[in-house]
Length: 149
Image 1 (cartoon, rainbow, N blue to C red):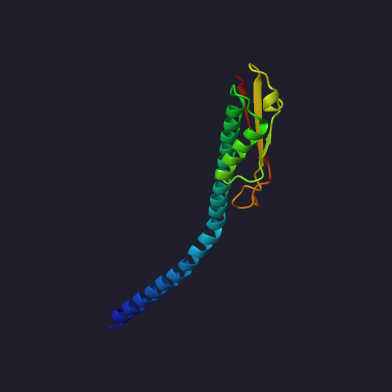
Image 2 (image 1 turned 45 degrees about the vertical axis):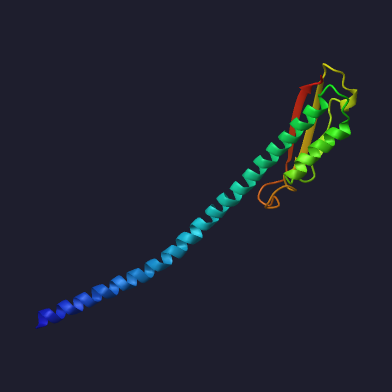
């Protein structure tokens, strides 16, 4: 009889230890979450910032190309028309506070056969979905050069 009782006591102690061990492991998931959550959030917000900068850069390049294309045509095109064209494209892509500049001079003063340059600038801070909190503000510049016809 003693041997049966000692086995029952031994089994019950083992099951108690197993329950205590399981209770101790339940806190481990909280520690894992606390350790991994900052890294996951940093990756998520960093990805959002990076893709918004890529989108901003691509939008500026498209607008610069279209403004330069309009300015390089043989017909008399004013700089104001080119600026309007670029601003319309940027507005459709929700780019804010972009500036258009003609480093080669106004479009109407460039002679045929010479290069015409249009440069666009925009702030990353003003065009960030996260308001640029993670990464410092930078100016993104896009430039397009074509020969006037």
